[in-house]
Image (cartoon, rainbow, N blue to C red; front, side):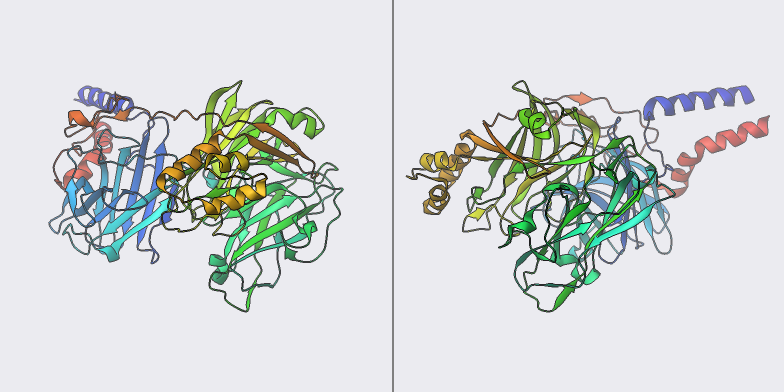
Length: 618
């Protein structure tokens, strides 16, 4: 008897090993979590396996009714996928992979691609845990990607599956976070240093860029900054658009006080090498364990420029603010000194976006061939490990693409579903190497259907920007590398006679922005010669020129065939299928499933039961 049970146990363990690989099980710890609603009624935990391309969710809602979790898009809830489940009064559970056919109506998917791992209800909470592939072969399922995703959560007060808009919430989340802060080391000798404005009276203007110059920590030997976080006053959070810390060259002559960063006194725009930055929606960020911002050596900056962008759209008077950035530093040195390289479209009015555009693409080119000359020393290969994307309200997507010897090498980073209200520093799943001579192209995608006048590049939130900050090591002296098109060429392509860039910018106001002219302007901007501006920490500036290369879209990988339910022939994509893992339970069927709670608990505890039986047998 014991031998037979042992054989069955080994067989079951082999099945688990072969089918799950690194997949998260029903009791695995899920590293990430977030509340999804303002009242903290809906709490989500999640984790994922990049290799298997499987994500696991655990939704806990303060209700004894049904719960639902899925993914939607920016513009409409129609077509959203939604996994729903609950526990009936008799103890039976129900669970189903569904989608919204209109704003309020759910319909079950023909292919059931979510795998139930647990469903429980007590007097206060209903908790549903399930896994699903990043990309199933069901057209009703939204892909889980490395973009910002709009996570949809909803629930009912009983077990009637009916959507209520008052209990439906959408939150933008970057689900595929590569590094969790708990996985990183925190040195025991950590020291905190704050860089902040003190009791600054926010002007009643729509947009204010406030700058001041502050010293970095004074240390007797080399230290590394390894983490930063925003310091925001709770009642002023919505007014602070971004905070940037720029390193100053030690030869710079710096002004005192607080002034407009880009106003009458040009001294307040000195220092252009970003070392840390925060924007709307971001939180704290800790660098990988092998990199840090070096301070304390003769080559390190001693002073910084603190820039805070305020948006006071309601023109509120008498608001004082003391926001800034908190730095964490240590004497325990990391292997590499890090830097930040700013890429994109040079921010000034030659950057224009027509009104009424369903889609408009802008480009900023960087050519690295002059980096060594401007650096004053050989530039080692740049190892990029993280990034921060930045546009204003019209931005819909961004990407940075790398070219070598005239051929596209890789997409370094992208977000095809950018959200202005979720701008955070993100880690790459790998370290991207940039060699001297490579070209880097930033593409920004905008939509201006809600605007009836031109949008120009500029500092205000109602202006636009197209920027990507690459976090890399080892540090060099290059602070930014950005491009812009020949506006005279663009104006001529649009039928406007101009002779200088200023006339070219003004001529854009004369164009009738029909859909045809919008596309013509986009094409002209892409085909125009780009002026590339490269800048160092010591304010040395060099110009070069180049042309925008084509971007070859990244093909999607194969979808994962459902482990239960029918996949229609028309659902098959050219990318083909990946075989589904062997299901360990009957949780994936094509109908709304009702399982007894006892049966579900038995399925989850079968392995423990076998072990206990073996011990008794021995």
